[in-house]
Amino acid sequence: MSNPAKDAIERRLSVLVVEDDLFIGLELKACLEDAGFLVLGPVGSVRDALNHIAKRRPDAAVLDVNLGREKVTPVAERLNVLNVPFVIASASDPEELAQYSELSNARNIGKPTDLKVLVNSILALAG
Image (tube, rainbow, N blue to C red):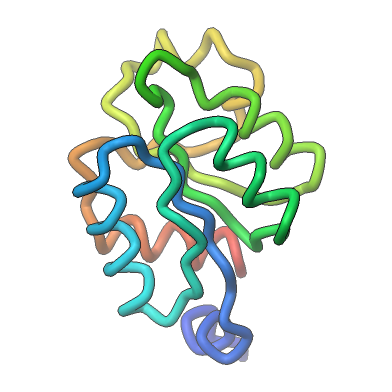
């Protein structure tokens, strides 16, 4: 029987972190690295996220919805086109998220983010 956590570490899955708050982004990065993932970012803008994706397609991603004055939807759209699974880490309410079709299949793990839930959610995406 396959162990998703062990498989993720052995394959060193890459996770793009898109978060405009540097302190939160660094916390998410440290948590994911401690769990054995290769973390891309954190990046805090749509442009930087799209540039990262163009250089290296991640295996999964964690997206904040509000990036300053921008919405993350262009990033989500690109990830959907590439079939890259992602979770949302946002304090946005379900009604706001429902406005964006690009986010409709993603789980919102909330903010503040429970780091154990974050790791388990990424493992579930990879499994």
